[in-house]
Length: 89
Image (cartoon, rainbow, N blue to C red):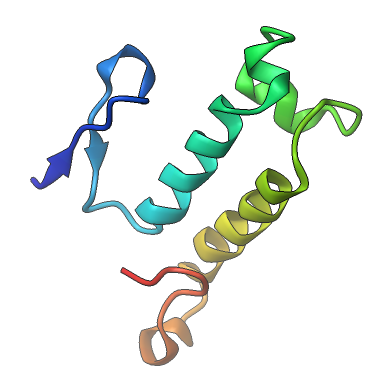
């Protein structure tokens, strides 16, 4: 199992690079942990995602949508030929 660790990851959780869409997931987590919703408001990440009025940058919202599309494309049988959407790895 290949994994690596980033200094900015909370609780020293290693990133599993064998998971589908792992780059998008990592970028999304990094974006969210750096957002004001978590840094200043001290809200849980789930609450920041679900609340449309939360102080979350548009870039994080775009990463969230792209990550959801990548995960959804895993269920589409056509991706066997086309590859997963948004996943470059």
